[in-house]
Length: 383
Image 1 (tube, rainbow, N blue to C red):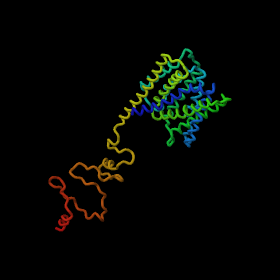
Image 2: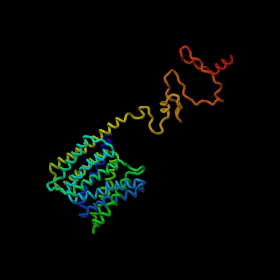
Image 3: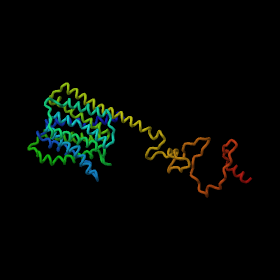
Image 4: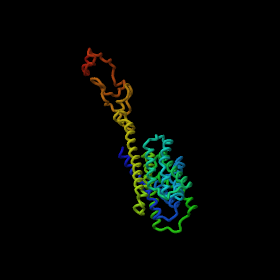
C-alpha cells in the first residue's frame, strides 16, 4: 500500500513540476504580452486531439459536468491566473494561489465528508509559508483586483479538484478522453476572450511554435492526464498539496537557466515545501494502511465466498442445515462430525427407487448397524 501511494504521488507531482516550467517557456519562447493566447493554445489543441482520438462525446448529464469541470480546472482558472499576474508581482501571485489547499480541505469536508486532521492543517501552513519564502521579495506589493483574482483562481482550482474527485469519471470513458473533454471545454471558453482581448500575433516564429507545442502537448495534454489520474487515486488534499512543487520547480529552473539568485531564505522555503509534500504523502500512506487493516481479512480466509463465479462447494459447506444445494454445487463437501457420512446424491424417482424399508433400529451402542449386501437382504425378506 505504501509503495502504491508513493508511486501515485511521484507520478502526480510531475504535473505541477511541468507547470512550474511555464514561466520559463513563456518568457523565452512565446510572443511577449500574449498571456490569453498562451492559455488558449495550451488548452485547446491538446483537448481536441484527445477528444478526436477517443471518438467519444459526453452523454446526458455529463455535458454540463464537463463544462463545469472545464471552466473550473482550465478556462476560468487560467483567466483569473493571468489577471492576478498582471496586477501582482509574480511572487505575491504565487503566494496568493498557494492557499488553494486550504479551500480543498474545506470543500472536501463539505462534499466528500472527509475529516479535517491536524497533519493536514500543518501541511497547509508549512507549504504556504515555504512558498512565501521562495517567491516573496522586497518589491512585493498588494493590489485589490490582483488579490481577488488570485483567490478566485485558487477557489476555482480547488473546486475543480474536489468535484473531479466527487463525480469521478463516466463509465467506459478512458482517462485521456476525460482529460481531452475538459481541456477542450476550457479552451473553447478562453478562445473568444483571447480573440476579443488580444487578437492574433502578426508574426509567429519557429521558436514560438516550439513553445506552443511544449505548452499544449507537455504542459496540458500530458500534465493534466497525470493530474486527473492522481485525483482518482489519491485524496483530494494530498493532490492539492503536491501543487506546492510548482513554485519550487519555477525557482530552481530560474536559478539554473535564467541565472536568478537563490538566497538562504529561499533554500529554507524549499525545505519547508518539500517537508509539506512528504508529510502529506507519508500520512496518506499510513491512513491507507490503517483503512486496509480495518477492512478485515480477505473473504477467502473467513469462508465467505467473494463475488463472482467461485467454487460452489464452499457455498454448500456454509449453507444452513436442510437447505437445498446450490446449482452446480460440488457433491464432495466437507464431511460433518461423526464416524461416517455419505455424500449427498440426487434422489431417484419412485419407479427406480424400489420399495421403501424402514431404517433398522440403532444398536445398543447407539450406532447404525453395518450395511448388508443385497444377497443378505433378499434372504432376510424370504424368511
